Amino acid sequence: MSFSSPVVLVGLVAVPVLVVWYIGQQRRRRGVAAAFASPLMTESVTPRRPGWRRHAPMLVFAIAIALLIAAAARPQRTVAVPVNSAAIMLANDISSSMSATDVKPSRLGAAQKAASKFVSEVPGGAQVGLVQFARRPVLVQSPTTNHALVLGAIAGLRPGGGGTAIGEAIDMAVHTLTTLPRKGGKRPPGAIVLLSDGSSNVGPGPLDAARRAKADHIPIFTISLGTANGTIPIKKRNGQTVNAPVPVSSQELADIAQASGGKAYTAANSAKASAIYQHLAVQLGHKKVQREMTADVAGGGLVLLLVGGALTLMWFGRIV
Image (cartoon, rainbow, N blue to C red; front, top):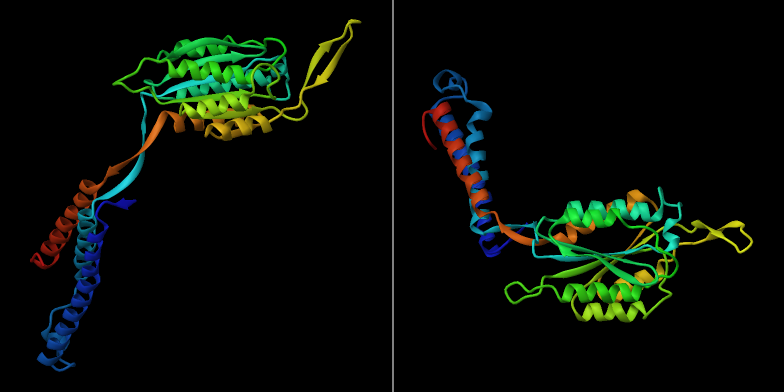
């Protein structure tokens, strides 16, 4: 919590001053009672003391005053609100290594499940698109607010052969985002979520593409999916099938994220991948804003003032 006018909080010193005054008043009353009658006669000539009830209204009043002073300082809290103008491109690796089953049911299957989770979590007004890539990228779905179309495109992803053209995939995603129709003369704020299990080995360098994305204010959030033990079956010329190792390679993806101003993540299983996509859906589909709480705090203070007054009337027949 923060305050727009924190200097007003200096007024909170009035609360301990009020407490000191109240304690002094109580001592003065006891002194008057003691002077009025001898200790032996006090019980018969003074009314029975109400115990804790005598102090309860004053405690309520003190808290109410503190809340009203805090309300005058205009308290604020940070909340996340949907960004319906956001445009997000999902870039998904569909190269042969994505068929490895070290991540269940497969790397690609886990990626599809996680991406679908992402689309389900982003605000309805956010535009989401999809690029698939292996040896070359393909724009499968242009950014749209019809998320059912995106979910259908994700479900249709299939392993697409050798090669991993990450650089070209980034360039295609950036071009798609930067050519979207402007709203109010401004381009929708864009981001790329790129998932792969290896390094780029086809086409232009991905780091140069990441720097171009940064120049266009489009951060890239990379997800490295897989383990060091992944393998895929490969047929040799003699017809024999062997398991070829396809260990995950995450360093280049981390460099891409850093060069673009985004963030890198790693996932060794389907649950972790889904959690990352869910986190990104909140991060990219929402923005943090300051909401003023003055009315809420002031209302609480006024309610406590009424409660304190009601207690004194009910117990002592007076307001203060």
